[in-house]
Image (cartoon, rainbow, N blue to C red; front, side, top):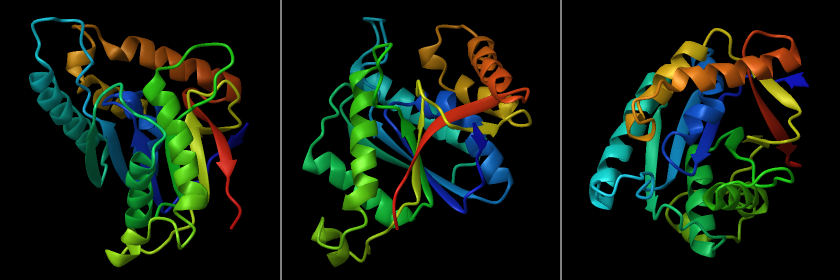
Amino acid sequence: MEPLETPERALVFTPHPDDAEGGCGGTVVKWIKEGAEVFLVLATDGRAGTSDPNVSMEELVVTREREQAEAAAVMGIKEVVNLRNPDGGLEDTREFRGQLVEAIRRFKPDVVLTTEPYHRLQHAHRDHRMIGVVAQDACFPYARDIHHFPEHRAAGLEPHKVGAILFWGSEDPDVFCDVTETVDQKIEALAKHASQFGGRNPGDFSRARVKQNGERVGVEYAEIFRRVTFRR
């Protein structure tokens, strides 16, 4: 596996609050410490993220949006965009694709990070699959080509060419980021999503996962990704 270089600008597409922190939080913190600007788009409102029948959807939406903002502040994210699509409702539609293309054209990232859409060995949440597929298409060709979503140009947003997309949670990773110096901040950010952990310490399983990744690549702690590069 190859180590990742730090980009100037990165954009994270996360399906639910807490997915980004678990998947790429250490990488995001490392890149920001090294001078990168990182932006985050939260695709859904997180309304389905509870097994407690006494918690209303409306209450949970407010809670999870606040938790995401607090976690982003820990990581140093420059801006969070809340799309507020229904949790469990992401689909490969023109509307959703347009939302992601608009974000790409606005923030102009060198690299996009999101969830792996393709699994052979395990099942993945449908929202995770959908955002992975739509994000890749949004990067190429839709954000690049001038005649896709002409309403963006009318609003002052020009086409943008993304260099690569990084999928966390892949069964076939080929690049990694050494997060040994940022794993504590990753876990601190993840812990902001208290509504999802029922009093458990997210550091226990999160640290074990990045330690296992690190053993694969010869560092103490690592986050690993599958990279797809787009032709310029």
